[in-house]
Image (cartoon, rainbow, N blue to C red):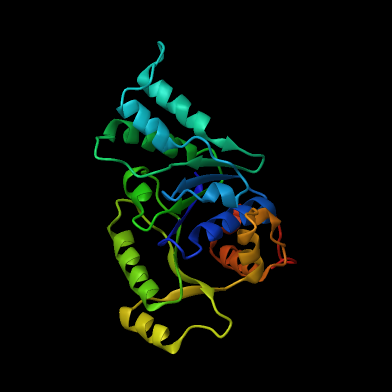
Length: 263
């Protein structure tokens, strides 16, 4: 069974960038393959991985519900499974499935049930699944029955961010899936650290911060040029700190490739 990593947080926190860097770290430093799932309606994970996404599950879902699909003698179940497979972008070290825009007012229960079955099957074919979620974590609550091994909740270092962390933590506790480990992290933290007012607010909310990732100029410049995270140097401070965090929380049985000299 795959080790499931989910990354959640509101837009603008660098959540998708961290998701992409996690995928890079697992594939390049640990040497394992990844099933990447972009479940954020903003759908930016593909670009961060250097991919051009053309087909999404949302497009398939809308066409089927609107009855625009000719099954041509194929069963409905088999057609949907085939179409989902066609939506996947396959690379040497990872595959990417992009969910796309949110659902409209129609009923998508049938398609979602088949999608859930397919995603559960994917969970048996890869060592790792990494999912970039929206703040509401709808993908985890409705589209998979697999447990989450590691949930990373990402926030910017602000009071609003602290309140969002508290809300997402409460939401995570209400999900119909088991979450074995969950950690709150602050991203894009300035060099002079967390403001004392923010630390007081975190303490009052009972929110524990497990990792602090700095604002990184190279990552910013990389994003400004529209380059993929694979263009960022291996010695990059954010990449190194993220790697140390993963090494600490991933099971040793899945970490066979030594990265001691790089972290």
